[in-house]
Image (tube, rainbow, N blue to C red):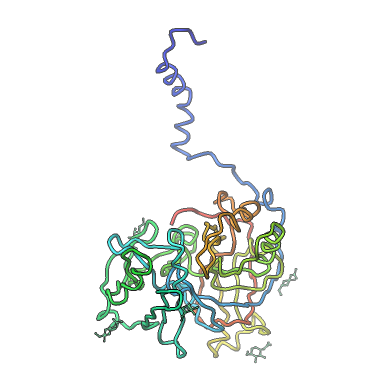
Length: 370
Ligand SMILES: *[C@@H]1O[C@H](CO)[C@@H](O)[C@H](O)[C@H]1NC(C)=O
Ligand SMILES: *[C@@H]1O[C@H](CO)[C@@H](O)[C@H](O)[C@H]1NC(C)=O
Ligand SMILES: *[C@@H]1O[C@H](CO)[C@@H](O)[C@H](O)[C@H]1NC(C)=O
Ligand SMILES: *[C@@H]1O[C@H](CO)[C@@H](O)[C@H](O)[C@H]1NC(C)=O
Ligand SMILES: *[C@@H]1O[C@H](CO)[C@@H](O)[C@H](O)[C@H]1NC(C)=O
């Protein structure tokens, strides 16, 4: 019982003493979390569907992180991602910290393309409504080119320091003029950027690296899921959005919306080949490519940005996604769209190839932190 002589300090002390065992528990165990929560509680639709197969309908790369990318019909899947995906990024000129659409939506108005023979990356930076500044650099710069035209320096992406080949002012100046701040274009340096979180070596079973994607090498998205989302947007009078909003690398048709939520391992191969037919292995392009699906892709508000105009919608699709796509127990405060993957091998990938689901799981749980 409290008597009138109890001082506020005394109350705090008493409360503190009462809470002590709990604080001790926290310190030892971390915040309590529901144990063994079955995802079915949240996601009645997460039924496993054996032997799924779908068709690749689009391959997309974004050579400069957060800038506009392009579609190709054929490319090489590398362990770090699609050949030219996120090999470059823009950093602040003085801190060398990475810049993204999150802070600077206008980055999406910088566009990229390949020269007809694929040897050059062509970057277009708007100068006025009717004029672009065009920059051309080798799409696969040689060590000699990098040595003459760049300087290697530490760069920071999320909480991690890695390195990059920093371009000179001739290339950087048009970016700085457009963005209204001093920036540098950097190409991924030689220090491996080892996957973390769900892709950490202890979980993945191998050490795998990537360039400048946020977390993992390849994002796979489903058109069926996008259609389902667009159906919801249309009902509330919002224009349908394109898959480019989500910046995926591989888009499949999708048998049904959201069946990808449970994918664990997938195999890409030419349609019509039997998955246990290895006799075509002599031809590089017919070797099946297996990818580990390491996590669902937890989204931020970047999909609210129109990739063409950089206009950011105040609410959509974020609000709609938040209303029904917070499906991952590991990151419940963010909605999920698409699946993040780490290729096990490298080879040619083409639109029209099939993507088969080899294994499914109900155990996906996003590990936050980079
Ligand atoms: C899935 O494919 C395997 C191997 O071809 C087969 O044994 C199994 O019966 C199939 N499962 C279903 C549900 O179709
Ligand atoms: C500038 O670049 C954009 C993106 O590539 C393109 O759509 C536009 O037509 C270009 N404008 C001019 C004037 O070339
Ligand atoms: C790269 O270096 C070579 C040799 O010094 C030079 O001719 C070329 O103009 C440079 N390219 C760029 C884009 O700076
Ligand atoms: C960031 O990467 C470097 C180089 O790979 C590594 O030594 C360092 O431990 C990483 N830092 C964090 C916070 O993971
Ligand atoms: C196996 O693949 C090869 C090369 O793609 C093809 O010629 C052959 O008919 C296939 N065999 C079977 C049994 O599917």
